[in-house]
Length: 286
Image 1 (cartoon, helix red, strand yellow):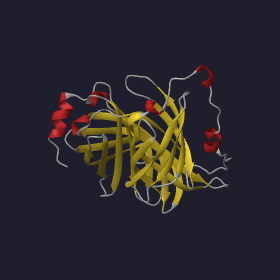
Image 2 (cartoon, rainbow, N blue to C red):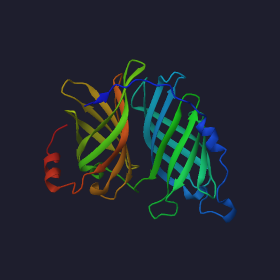
Image 3 (cartoon, rainbow, N blue to C red):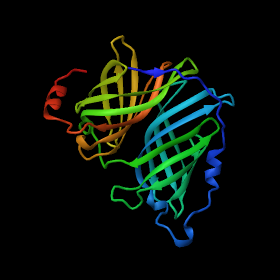
């Protein structure tokens, strides 16, 4: 289901973005602000991408993950991610550390367990009834990261995904431990609300994979998909909005070991789910 276009690597000018952000002056603090560490409290769906690029523009490592970050409203944060790298796909990645938020809605996270990394937060929608959201960027000894996070629904289950969802993603193709392609995948994901899923990608050529999915109460899910040739891919999901299947949005990664990995978002198709889709899906076998 891949449609990658080979591109020529070009040298990149690598700047220490994360340290520069960490030194940014507090803007608007003179007049007070609306944010504090309590602004980000509870569980957030997180999507995170990372890359390591050599001085010649070669990708030496890539990283994609989604999952949750849980903040206590004071200073502690716990991350539970599922990651894909050149070395392995579908790998649990638990981390924890401390965080702080300035009055101007800029903050930081210091990871000190499960890894060592520094992230900068830029919070928006502060004070919204649905909860704050934030953009995230940072680095560790291997990767330069960027991503986003949004509050999760209060409770999720299999039926949270029922119907057709459009997804768009970007990522890499690779052979062994080397990135050799970059490209995008868009298509449709159809969930039956009972644990069965079909993915259709229609970009240039059409490909269909089928499998089963699970969804935990904390709105993190996973799926194993198989194509007509018996090759398996893994998908991880992190739901960030929706009280019904028709209003559900989620972060998604899709990867096949030693072949490709992509990261993106999925949204319920307008008018979905329909009763006919529910009936048809519930009768399918995994």
